[in-house]
Length: 554
Image (cartoon, rainbow, N blue to C red; front, side, top):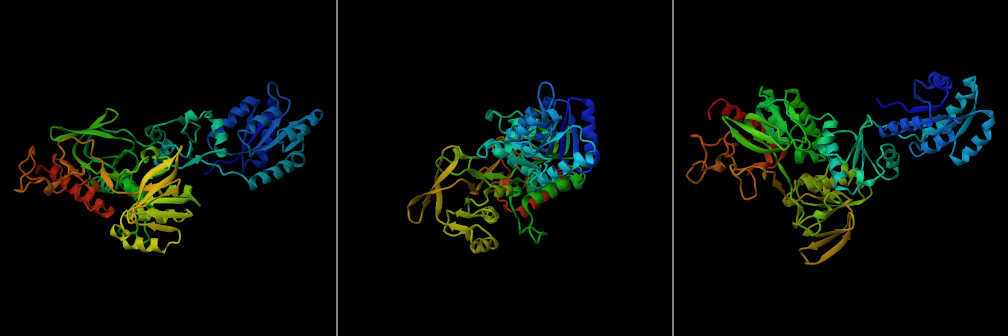
C-alpha cells in the first residue's frame, strides 16, 4: 500500500512536541503519518530522507522560537524540499508580527497561537481546511525507484530500459520535478548523474546495471558451481529451454545480460502467438515464462555475462565476466540477435540521445504529441509504429524497399494503411543524423528520385536487420558468413562428414553446435525461422536433445 502522507511537527520543547504530535495523531492518525523533530536541522534531515524515498509531506507545523534555527527560517529552507506542503507557524502572542510578515516572506499558509487548547476549536478546523486544499492538488506518493538524469543521456536511457524490462517500478524525474529530490539526495552536481534513489533512501550515483540489479534483489551470481544444463540467453528460445529443462528435473541455470525477453520482450503486442487471441505484449509473455521457469526450480541470473565456454572432462566450464565460473554437463546457446546499427553519418554519436535501437513499449509515453521516425519494414517496426501512433502526433515509417508487404505480416500492413497518424515513406533511407547534444535533424535519401531532404526530428527508432551475439565464442564454434551458429546437418560437408575436430563417432544432433554438448536455439542459429513461436519450439527441442546427450549416446 502507498505510504500515508506525512505531517511533520517541529518544536525544541520536548513536552510541547509530544503534545502536538499526540493531538495530530488523535485526529489524523488514520489518514496521515505524524513525524516529529526537535530542531530545524533535524527536521530538514527528516525531509531530505522522506523526499528521497518518494514519500509525500502534506503539512509542516513549526514552532517559531527555536535556538539555532527559527521556525520561519526552517519553513523557508523546507520550501525547496517540499514545495507543495502546507506551512504553519506555531507562535506565542508576542511574535504575531513576525508571523504576519512570514506570510509574505516564506509563503506561510497560517499561524497558530499557543496554547491551542481545545484543539477541536483552535487546531483541527485550521488544519482540516489546509489539508483539504493540499489534497486537491496533492502529488501521489511513490514507492519505486526514482531515476534522475538528463533525457538525452545514453546512460540514463540504458537504466530506463533495464528497469522497464525487468518490471522494476520507477519514475524518471527531470527539470523542476527533480529539483527537490536532487537536493534531498545531495545530487545537485550534474556530474553525479544519472543516479537512482531507492525507496529506503539509498542513493547510487552513476551506477552500473549490476549495481542496480543487486540493490533490487535480482540474482547476479550463480548459487552453485555445477548444473545439469546452463541456458545462455533469456529470450523466447532460452526461456523455452529453461521451462522444459526445469520441468523435467534438470538442474538448470538461465543466464541473461540485461533482462528476460530478449528482442521479443520489447514488442508492444504480439498477435500471432498461439493461445493469445487478443495478443500479448512481449514483456508480459517473457515475465510469464520467467515465472514459470522459476516455479520449476530454474535459477535465473541477471546482468551476468558469460565470456568463454571451455571443455572440462565430459562437461563444459562457463566463465563469467566477473571471474567466476560454473560447470555444466550441457549448454544451450540462445543468445539471440541485436539490431544492426544504422549506417548513417553521425548515427553512432547520437545513440541513446535520440537514436534508439528497438523500442520498449514505455518509450511511447515520452513521445506524446511528438513526431516520431521509425526505420524498418519488418513486423517489429510495424508493431512499434502502431504502438507509437497511440501517443505521437505523427509517426513516419522509413522503408528502403518499395513495398512494406515484402517483410511484414498482412494484419500489420492493413492497420498501418488504415492509420491516420502513420505515414509510410518507401524507397527512403537515413543517410545522416545531425544535432547538437541530441538528435535534431535527419537527412533522408529517396532512391526512386535520387534526391535528399533534411527534416526536423528528435526521436528515431531503428529496426533494420539483426546480427547474432556470437563474437565472444571461440574458433571451435562453426558460424556462417553472418556469424550465425551452424548446427546439425549444416555442419556436415558434401559427403556427410562432420567438421574437422569433431571428436565423436556419431554426427551432430539437429541443434548441436560444432562443440559436442552445446546446442543452439532460436535466432542465433543459422537457418532458424526467426519467429517467437519457432524460437520457443527450438528451445524445447534443445532440451530433448540435451537428454539424449546426457543419456550417454555421445
